[in-house]
Amino acid sequence: MATLYPVLPTLKYDQSSQANYNVRTITTDFGDGYQQVQPDGINFNVQTGTLTHRLLSLADSATLRAFLETNCGTSTVITILNMMEDPTGGTTLNVYLQSYSVTNLGTHFNYTINYREAFNV
Image (cartoon, rainbow, N blue to C red; front, side, top):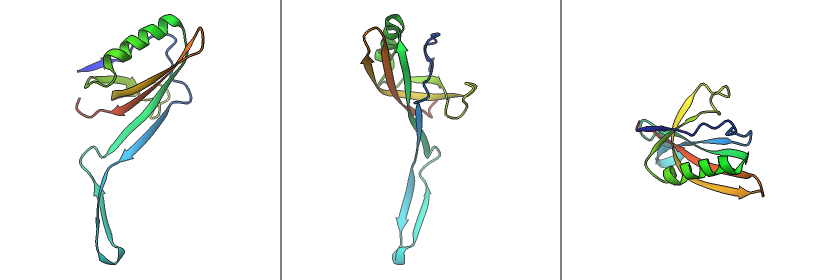
């Protein structure tokens, strides 16, 4: 069951958000340096990445933190905007939230959230 990421006016993906693509392959070595390389399974190209939310107010930080505490590290599939594939925000991506960190800047907070693409939706 997909859950929508919380929509708050100040939650925007910062330009420092990044995506990585981990390609799983099966490699077989033969004599004389020959290799056979093939994709490992149907979903062999897995997107992982980091979402960064900067300068959140105390109220927005509390909302996001409650959401992350409920969903991070669970089998819950979250739908986010796939900003790496479509900067206009028209493409979504189903992910698992793996971990997050919070930086307290006094009156505002920065969040860094790590995700992994989910295929079982």
